[in-house]
Image (tube, rainbow over all chains, first blue to last red; front, side, top):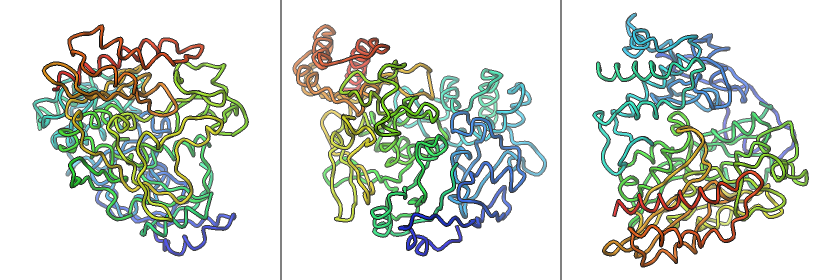
Length: 191
Length: 331
């Protein structure tokens, strides 16, 4: 946010709310971007409406379905529950930024090979979630499917049940879940 | 969402002073509950103060006496992945992992988690209007409505909602302490005193007031924590709030319970500590299922189910038993 916080704090006692547009600097898919937003604009709407990155989908808009999943500083988050002005200076990755030198990310290829989607509306969220989830598992994060959280977690522990649990924040109206799990498992095996 | 102003706090004292004088100002950290409340018009703050840049509030540190201090801005996923949390307090790591989704756990802060508001459908529904928590004095639609998910302990005619936090149940069992900084300085609130029963003022979920900022949660060491477990029963296998949950921890002596800790979620307006059961469990063999059941039952003599949730009285006792037995297997 470009506003001086001290200036704003000095004016918090009045009832009238003077709402100023905020200029936000972001790095989106490795490019420096600047957007001017209302404070209430979500990161999801800023990506779609201001930056025309419409690969990120708006479905429930309540943090319940995962279709809007993007990465902030490499971590998967829900862009519908994030205010754009609160990610000032952060590195954002969307589905448009996953490919490298014209080649799809291995998980994108795996979704095609394993038919991990039908209508496709949840797919960008599924893939963004899956890519970050693979990093979490590599970093040794346990999940609710982990039998013993007291022990370190390794990739060898990443069973189908683990993948299902770790991907449960992404709903698929077409119920392509078995193929989504196949795609993620395959991408991990190949990486 | 309604229009609001947004600014960023860089100094805790100034943030606390701003919150103290301005009833229309709300702190925002992860935002996973507050943004949802705003979208549902259950919270309409005119000003948000982003506290994510406040210094030294996201760390997980060892306490000099043992145990851990978890900063209020630490994210659920970081706390759940922390090896010291997992080794010393498995019940806390499990409670975090059984909550929400991977995306939400990356966003949600520990301070926000224990502040989250009820998932009662009548509270979240802006069209009904009969909710004393949302609109004080408007009545409680759940009292004679669909109350399958609601309280069986300690409810009032004003409100029958339950607290949705899994973490809060584990922290209750662990006798955690909420460290709050206010205008008069820092104070330490025992976890069992942090949340309130609804009484006639269900609009207040906890004891915090204007100008109060949660800075950390301290979890002191205890003899039972290493053999602890969080068990959550819900309508879906994942990504759902609890119907009933239990945090259990025990210390044993040659197969007999020396001391036990037991708290439950999904049964009351606050995490529910089963003190009568804890007393009765002392000295019982972990293999004596009938004795364990009787000891747990002592905490259910004052259960008062509603029209649609009588099943919770039996379910909760079974969940408590299984949580204790699983914790026992860790001794």
